[in-house]
View 1 (spheres, protein in one colour):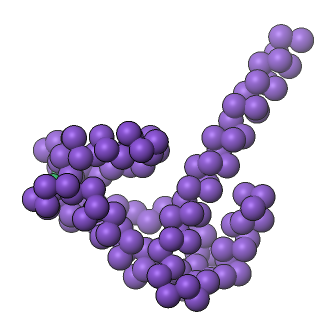
View 2 (cartoon, protein in one colour):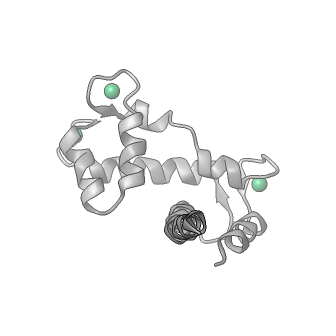
Length: 133
Ligand SMILES: [Ca+2]
Ligand SMILES: [Ca+2]
Ligand SMILES: [Ca+2]
């Protein structure tokens, strides 16, 4: 009985978090579609990442310091904060533009099922169905 209760609690806690995480990636991809043709190219995702770096780099020194990365978690981006911290591949405590741009495009790669470097409207629709949106 105790086991069942724990299992139910785990499902209740895990499901919204999971949907939120997937939904966040989806929302980010949709925001990257600047020409609103319903398809998102890898170039658009790269450009969106550049814009995000510029937005976070408050003092425009070309690096995201610990403080600048903290601004992300303050906005509720715990998952993104973790991603930014792990982007510091040379462990100098700050994330350079090159480090940020060389991060893998996990969400994009997962959605781009036919690997043509574009997440098409159809591929997005599959993701939405999966996330119940
Ligand atoms: Ca900076
Ligand atoms: Ca670094
Ligand atoms: Ca594709």
